[in-house]
Each structure stands twice: as C-alpha cells, then as structure tokens.
Image (cartoon, rainbow, N blue to C red; front, side, top):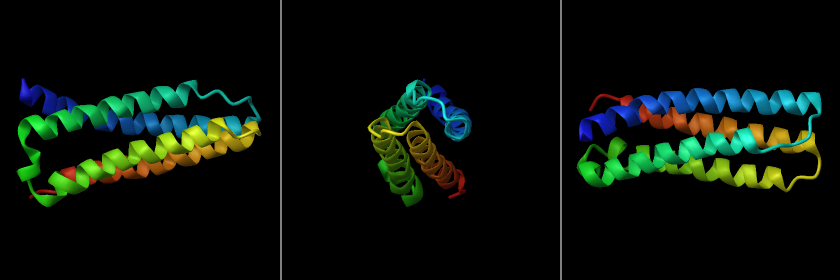
Length: 129
C-alpha cells in the first residue's frame, strides 16, 4: 500500500506540473483577451496541488522520510509547501484586484512561480542519493 502511495505521489507530481502550466497559459491568454476574472480553473489547480502536498505530508510521516537524505527530508517538502502557499496567496490577491486583466496576470504569475517551485521539488526528489 505504501509503495502505491509513493508511486502515486511521484507520478501525480508530473501531472500537477502540467496542469499548473496549462492554467498559467490560460491566465495569460485571458489577460490578453480582457475576459472577466473567474478563479474557478485556478482554484481547481490549487486544490489538486493541495492534494499532492497532503499526500506528500502523509508519506513523510508514515514512511519516515525525515531520516532520508537532506534533499528529500527537508528541501523537497519545503519547496512543495512553499509552492502551494505562494500560489494560493497570489491567487487570493488576484481575486481582490479590480481590473480583470491585472487579476489574470497576477494569477498567471502566481502559477508560474508555483510551477518553478513544483519543478524544483520534482528535481530535488529525482537527484540520486
């Protein structure tokens, strides 16, 4: 069971990173088109990322990853939590922005920052120890 959860966490990380990229592209396209701001797609993206981070936290506790190499034990979880926190904060700020194009750009920037941090977390976890 633990191995299934570990493999799920590993592969859904790639799926989440692709979804974050797609959501960022949509945000910038909507900003260019001047569409009214709707956070639904972006919220759904962060919900999936939240589930990914939650699964990682469960694995961290159950499998005892605090005893792993420092990149896995400390850097990987911090990058994941930071990606989720910064992205959610910028989405919240975008929702309070008056101009729709500015809101979309801010949400898109938050998603790009999230993507960079998610890819960094994946990269750190992929380093052979």
